[in-house]
Image 1 (cartoon, helix red, strand yellow):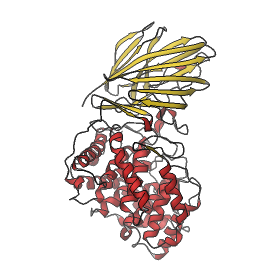
Image 2 (cartoon, one colour):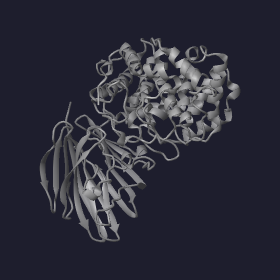
Image 3 (spheres, one colour):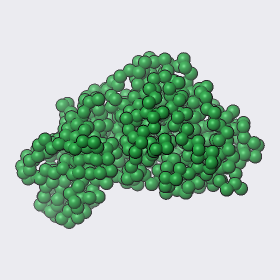
Image 4 (cartoon, helix red, strand yellow):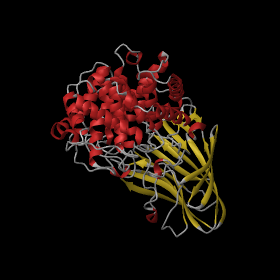
Length: 580
């Protein structure tokens, strides 16, 4: 684990600071582009897709920061390296050819950056290329329209490619009917109150901000001749998203670690950067700027780079355990999405505004459209959550009862259940004496009203009705009702405390009726108190490399043995986060 001091020491106070940050994040890639061209390989492993697609990521993803930098007049002297990579990558006769896209193909993802490049900066991305390379690039990009796409944010990739082709005079390759159909589908995923579900599954995570809203604002504000109806729709939805999405960020800038693709890190500032293009009042602009800047700066405390200055896979530290199968060594450069405001001139209100402090909408803020309730505790955010559980990836990123900006979520929550070692914020069952454990894998229904959330969900063949009551003092109660057809061991866990550099302390631990456990770690205190009459055992599970915020963590939990029949469990949970 290492720090990259050009990033860590950048104050990020001015537009010039942000411009320099983009150049500094790109600089470690220069030796690879110089020596390998389109076949860029960081020699740090791979992903489920082929290495040509991984190389393509390494060329395409930095463009999300480079394009705004140059569009806004910033200096970027390395265009020849990118032009050479494009020339090699789109030439079917070259050994470094990236290959054609196909159904649900990673190349389609990366094509979006080139579409954006041609659409807004053709003088850098198109005009310097030879006629042969231009034709090869256009043909290569246009193929995205003829292959099956996941029915989610990926549809925007086609729209961006179409915009780029149109801008450079290749509208002959554009399928206009497909364009209209994709706009209609994207609009249909809107859930209300600013929230999108990501596609037909309606997953609620950071893709709502750094994908759906991000691309929607690019479409509405930057592309030539957008469909005006949908452009205005994207703008209205983005404005409505500002307040609810702000609840996913701590006062000090940290984002809620929830959902897939955490290794993109400060891409979560992408929405705030895109929101800078909205016609906002002065106070709103200052709020957006503060959320943007504080989030990027929050990463300067974390060793997220390699010794070579390359972004690593992981979240607050390098960690392949939490990576998705589609995270290649070059995937983290989607973090460059954070720098969209650089296309705005120095005189724009975003750059002229002072950063305003975070302004939470209240200590408890219900978000029915997101199946969640946000809670503010010591300037940190806790979100009680019952969104769609995306089982294609690690369930832990969607199935916990709560996520926190201070108390990191644990992956592999039941992998070591046979050793009585569990992840945070779950209820899990074992009906074979602790060998196998089942936690929540699907929600059947969710109701959010005020400070309460009622969830009907499944853990294997056990149906559970959970009532969560969020309390004004920073705690919450969870009451679970379920039917057991045979005896079971049941475990309920609380928030994980961190012990990266200093061992945790156990402040209280008692078993039996009214069992309780209180742990204190580097990030604060975590407490569970049983409120029912069942006899329970209090435990603390020491874990390594499973927490997104700390490589060493401890999870408090209560364990009970229940007979067959209808059962009710109820416990109180509370945290006291450390303040910065």
